[in-house]
Amino acid sequence: MAKNRKIRKISEKECRRIKRNDGLRMKTVKGYTFPDFMDAISSRYPKRTCYKVFRTGEENDMTYSQLVWYAKAAASYLLSLGVEKGDRIAIIGESSPEWMVMYLSIVSIGAVAVPVLPDFSSRDMLSILRDSGAKGAAVNIKHYAKIADMGENLLLFRLDDLVHVPSVPAGVAFQDAPGFPLRTQKIREKEIEKAKPEEGDTASIIYTSGTTGTSKGVELSHINILRTADLATDVYVKLKPGEKVLSILPMAHVYEFTIGEVLPLMKGLEINFLGRQPAVSILIPALAEIRPHVMLSVPLLIEKVYKAAVLPVLKGGGKIEKLSKNSLTRPVVMRTIGRKLMTTFGHRLKFFGIGGAPLDSEVERFLHEAHFPYALGYGLTETSPLVAGCGSRHSAQRPGFIGPVVSDDSVILLDKNEEGIGEIAVKGPNVMKGYYKQEELTREVFTADGYFRTGDLGFLDRKNRLSIRGRVKTMILGPGGENIYPEMIETLINNIDFVEESLVVPEDGGLLALIKLDVSLMADKMKISAQEAQKEAEKYIASIRKNVNSQLAAFSKISSVKLQDKPFERTPTQKIKRFLYPERKKKEDKDDENS
Image (cartoon, rainbow, N blue to C red; front, side, top):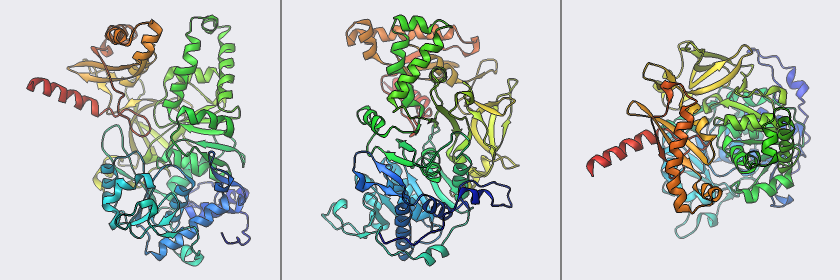
């Protein structure tokens, strides 16, 4: 890398003094475009390390000045290839420093990044490339085969080493194909400046793979993403330059990108990647060595930790279980377990963000009692994503509530029932521009006065704290027109011994509970064979039905239960794809009729 010329430091104090016509008070950047973001972080933290990959050596670390330099070099090269404002370029690969370099290079010249989750199938990836009209794709070696059918029609970039691959010769593997390195290209500042985007220009089109089964391209502008991150930099936790982040979620998901990448970079933090899937065998030593101050997770991770490490202690039948049931001694037990859990996470954790899906209420109660520094967040891809959240301080947490609505947003509840529960609707600078090429669908999700309908049901208390009560589309009408929220019934089921997960769906005028059990654990605890445990499982879920129904109103009682042999299919944020299961049941019924 060539020697940097001296750049004037852009201080946060300077940014906070800026007066905007829209009334937004800035915190860490002078404008809400990614070039403004790049200027701020490279001037403020030039020699600090921004990215590391676990156990790959210091030579692979990346500083803030290198991140921006490489991005500008790549941006100059993209311009030389004819990439213009509005052109779409997909990014397909696991989280890495190169992923962010590619993203910044694309959006800094007004082009549009199309982040694609690496777990998507070839069919899904090709569909996204076609629907977005992608001009190019930056793809990891391991995922190239998924898009090879379209490779000849795209500007192709190898994400692993940031190389433009003009073509892949016959008989040559993608990893061996020759090309032009992006990092070493000459930076053409004037051309980059001329291509600088506006705040309202589209930065990303993110294709969701949701619980409803319909994939939509969400258009997020520069201001959508950057304002969301900037606003949150000092609201939920106080961050200091040099503090460490352990990143385990895919950057292609807006939750990780906005809150787990952009926000920490605004504050000069060091982001560490595992460089592989976050299996226990790699996650535990990484926590011990990195000792992160900040982590983001989906609920499934901490729920697994709770069931594997905490629940056996609390329900082990020993002295601790007895003490945990005594109101006088329970606080001491919980704080003790909480300290041990903090040790597992490296003992420096100050913010453990949980989002992307609902957190089990029993797990949340434990985290709160244990004084674990968890923080809940609620939002959608369409809201960039944050709508409401709580800080990681114990006093900021209130079990059952996500937390206050972000200060920028206006949130209203549509069609409220007598309990004050209604559909959450949001208006603010974080709300998407719309669904790409789907004007009618975009109109459908906005009210006449400009509020985005989230499809989630919620309740707001007097302090404007938001509680999520389910999805509009999953709410079931009872026999007398009562509102039944299946997620609340599932929480009761999931907190019963041996239950891994469950799903409650309507069936023949009643409710069917599909229940996945940990049969191996059942066999171990009951000291019986696996075959015997499988037989006991049928009896056990019948007892679960009786247990849960004793806690439910008459109109929301479970009519029937069924063992779920395989894990439920999930979205990238680990929400169950509910739409599959009623359809699957209909197919089973049809097959039975034809047999």
